[in-house]
Image (cartoon, rainbow, N blue to C red; front, top):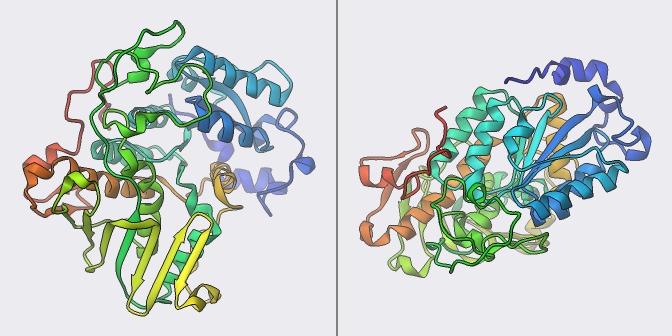
Length: 439
């Protein structure tokens, strides 16, 4: 099914909803709540994956938006699914929110215009492609995907389907990170020679013991394309939890710290370098890959990006340094971060507000205007590619024996290395019924 998006065309939006045009972010008390807003002036939303991030952050924010209304939730755990529905119903003061075990049933609804996804990473690729085929716009949590093959497929599907897609790397909507990248891009610390990104290391194979599982969880669908294994509460705690489960550390479901925090900080490194449409051309494994730090990425212009250093992102230029992390911005010399960006200088994308709130609002604004949001699919794909290329170097360090990998960021393949090209996907077959569709 292909959704008719004509009611959200740019011309239709600017003409039919002129009250929203300047500015797009209007206090809720001015426009009224989503229950009373005309259906053709708000985005019908579906929420996929009701874990801590969705329940505690995404849903509450979307409930406050007058330009959108949450209509349904999808979750394979009965308790979390019911908790998500209740949170939506309590927010609107009704019982209208639908709840699904299989997100595809939600995608089949004509009144769902867009979906937000916060599942574990091994599901992102499949859900992105299914949403594109159903004609839904999408907000997907970072990292974009769990493999390089999925990232390329997602990028191609989104571009081919006119999907307005926002990757949940919300640091792009934070003023400190944007300003740091503007300073770098405008030469305030001279020519960039090296960048250090301090995040965690690669994932490891899942080795948690199996447990008895109480009824109410569709464990087969929780696993999705990953190999069948016994249930573990380490991977999927039952009920509505208030933490981020440890599946992120296992390669079947996530990419370790390299993709979890790397999807944030490598993204800022790429932004500061102006490499949103490209990436490194060489990946140099560290002398000891088992340490999980030290992999080096080399760009065509000679800049080196190193996995290591203090937590956050440090840009080293010929005339100084800039360090940025959440809540921190420092420079050498000290006065660099006090310099305003002139009107005639490079100014980067500004979201309508900071952090998660501004990032989500930017997406809804773009769903309505049909413009590209701050962290569109190609940005998300190329950022996660850096993270995953680093994981290739760590996980296959013994086979590489220190060999530098050459990467073609346009062809999305390793140059002259058939063995390495096999590492772009999972090291095991996708389970039957969960194969990645052909684009």
